Amino acid sequence: MSNEVLRIALVGNPNCGKTSLFNHLTGTKQKVANYAGVTVERKEGLFNLPSGQTVRVLDLPGTYSLDAASPDEAITRDVCQGVVKGEEYQDAFLCIVDATNLKLHLNLLLEVAALKRPMLIVLNMMDEARRRGIQLNPEALSQALGVPVVETVAVKQGGVTHLLKSLEQQQFRISSFEPSADLREDINHIFTQTVTSAVNDDKRTTFLDSIFLHPVFGLLTLAILMFIVFQAVFAWAAPFMDGIETFFSWLGESVGEYISQPLLQSLVVDGIIAGAGGVVVFLPQILILFFFILVLEESGYLPRAAFLLDKLMFKAGLSGRAFIPLLSSFACAIPGIMATRTISDPRDRFTTILVAPLMTCSARLPVYALLISAFIPQKMIAGVFNLQGLVLFALYMAGIVSALIISYIIKLFRKDKSEHSLLMELPSYRIPDARNILLGVYERGKIFMKRVGGIIFALSVLLWFLCTFPQPPENATLPDIDYSFAGMLGHLMQPLFAPIGFPWQICVALIPAMAAREVVVAALGTVYALSGDEDAQAQSLASLISSPDSGWSLATGLALLVWFIYAPHCLATLATVRRETGSWKSVIIMTLYLFGLAYIMAFFTYQIASRMFA
Image (cartoon, rainbow, N blue to C red; front, side, top):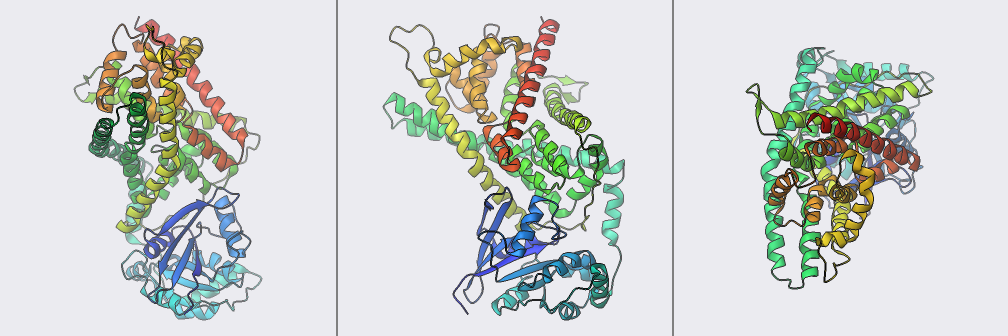
C-alpha cells in the first residue's frame, strides 16, 4: 500500500447521511476554511485506514444535480469536474446514496458517473431501508454502472467496516455506464433492476407529518418547540455563565496581585482578562442553541418547519429556506448569514441577509438584562406573567415583526416580481446521532471563538486604551475618563444623540458596541469607573443609571432598548456580509438602513415615553 495520502471526496444529495459519514470517519480531525475566491466553506478531515495509510476526506456541499443553482452546488460541480484550484485531482469520489430513496438520488449518481472519474457508490441507511421493507440488490446497481457498491450505516459504530475495507483495497473504478438521450429513462431502468421490493411510505413519518405539518397543530407545535429552545438557552446557560464570570473575576484578582505597576495591572486585568471573559461568557448560550438546532436538523424536523412557514414567509418576500438562517441568527448573526448559502434565489438570499441582524442574538442579552432590571419593575401581571419577562419577549417579537415588514417592503420595490416556489426533500424522521450532535456543537463553538472571539478581545483592549489615555492632569477635578480619548469622543457625539435621550456615557459605550454587543455593559462600567466582577458591576450599573441624579430616565432606558433592536451588529457581522455578498455596497446598505431605523425608532420611543412618564 502506498504511503501517499489517499484523497477522496464525498458527494451526494442533501439528507443522504453524507455529513454523518464524514463525522464518523474523521472525528475531531476536521478543519473548516473557505474555498479561495468564494464564500463557500471547505470542510475536510483526516483518518487512517487499518493499514496505517492516511486518507484525506473532502466533504462537498449537498446537491441534487451538477446543474448548480447556488454557490454551494457550484463548488460541488466544479470539484467533481476538477476545475477548482487545489482540488483538481481526487483519487476517488464516494457517491453517497440514501437506500430509502434511491430513485431521487440516481439523478446525481448518473451525472457523476458520466464524468468518468474514479468513484465508489456508498449505499447508506441500509438499516432504515430494511426496517421499511425495501429490498435492494446492490450487485445489480454495481453491474448497471460498472462501479463497486458498498453498504453502510453511517450513524452506527461499525457501520462503515465494509467501506474501510473497500478503501483499503482501493475498490473504486471509472464507470462504464453510457447514458442514453433520456436521463429519466435511464433512472427508471436502473431503479427497476435494483429495487426488487419497495414500500411507498414510512408509517412513522406519515403519522408524525400529520401532526407537524398540520396547518394548526403544526404551527402550535413549532411555537412550543421554539419556546422550549429559548427557555433552555437562557435557563441552562445561566450556571455555566455564572461559573465563567466567577472564574475570570478570580483570575483577574489573582493575576492583579502580582502586578504592582498600575497601568500594566489595568491593561492585564481590565483589558486582556476581562476582554477574554467577555468572549467566553456567551459561549454556553451559543452552544446550547446550536445543540437544539442540530438535534432538530438531524431528526428531520427543520425542513418541515421551513415548509410549514413557507406560505407566511413567502407573503413577506422571503423563502421557507430562510427559516433556518434566521433561527441560527438568534445565537449569532454570523452563522445565520453564512447559512443563507442554501437559498438558491439571489434575491431571497440577499433579503434574508439584510434582515438576519434583526433577530435578537445572544450578545444583546446583557444589555437587555441591565436595562430591564434598572427600569422595569419586578412584578407579576395577572398573577401569571413576569413583567420583565414580557418586556424581553416583546423585544424579541419586535425584531421578528420588523424583519417581516422590511422584507415585505423590499418585495414591493424590487423590479423582478417573479416568484420561486419552495422545492425541498422532506427526509424520514430519525433519532439524532449523539456523535454527530457533539461534533457539530464542537465545530460551531470553535468557529465562533475563532471568528468572533479575536475581534471582541482586541476591541476590549482598545476600549481600555481609549478610556485610560491620556492621563488626567495633576489638578484634575473631573473623573479620569473625562480627560480620555473616549470621554472626548463621547462629549463630541452627545449633541447628535441628545434627541433620543442618550447622555455622553452611552455615546462612549456605543463605540465598542460596534465591535460586539457583549462589551456594552463592561464599557458602561468602565465609563462610570466602577469596579468588581461583572455581576457586581451590572448590579451597580442598574442602581446607578436608575437613580434620579444619573442623567438617565425611563425614556432613556426604553430608547436604548429599542436602539439595540435595530442598530447594526458587530463589525464581524458586517465583515461576514462583505464576504458572503462580495460587495461593499451590501455592507453600506445594511449599515445605513439599520442605523436609520435605530435612530428613528429610538427617537419616537424617547419622545413618546418622555411625555407619558414625565
